Image (cartoon, rainbow, N blue to C red; front, side, top):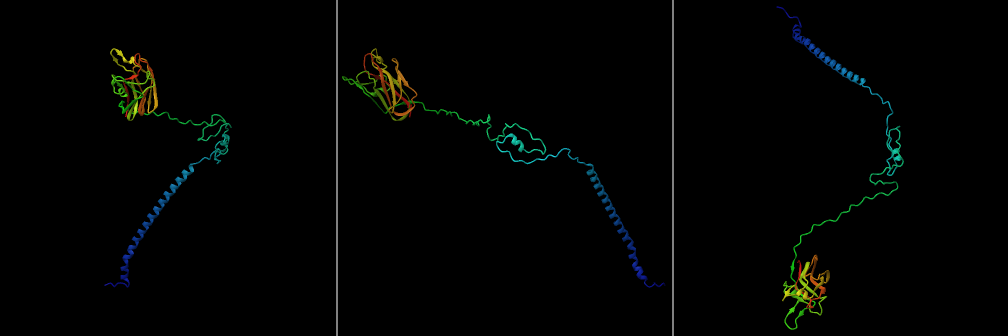
Length: 292
């Protein structure tokens, strides 16, 4: 039986550890080879990119300017009213460039002022806008109606001394041509008057008048037999509004376009035509038209 040498078991026990060392060395060597290879590839790539960039920069050449370099020179602002020569010298220009020559008569005019037409002439004033008359549409008005008098009176009235026949002022306003007012003074009745007073003020538009007794009785024309109107004057509240001349054969008169507010309407018979048979002035009808 063989006897193991001293220390033999220890060498056998250490054998496996000696077997692992070669594998560990191979593994570390492989890692180092990979690391050096990666670093070599990266270095090549970096050197190639920088080389390409350096080649591009080297190939791009910038030619310097052949002429003088322009430089703007700051100047003071142009004052209002300065001449063009002063404006040209103060305007920004390139250094070394020639200055444009302008005629000394031209003026630099501010835009907010009016340029005179001639040198030394005053500025023209802008014309003001004048508005024309404003047309107002006419307002619709109510049609005129016959206004009934509240009270009537006359300068005089004629009454028969032998009978009960009377010709008062009311007969001129009753609308009946068979009745009439007769004045009662001596003569043909020039200057006599009739008056109608309304219950309240109204817009008086027109006054109608039959200028004589327009009636035939017993084969006789009472218009020419009695005196009739030659000139009439219209007063409203004591103020004359209009007057009218009447023809010798004009039996009806309408005083139009009065348009006066009032309450007392008076007709003054300033002149009359004398009657062929009777001296008395006879008025059968007076009408006042308006709106209350």
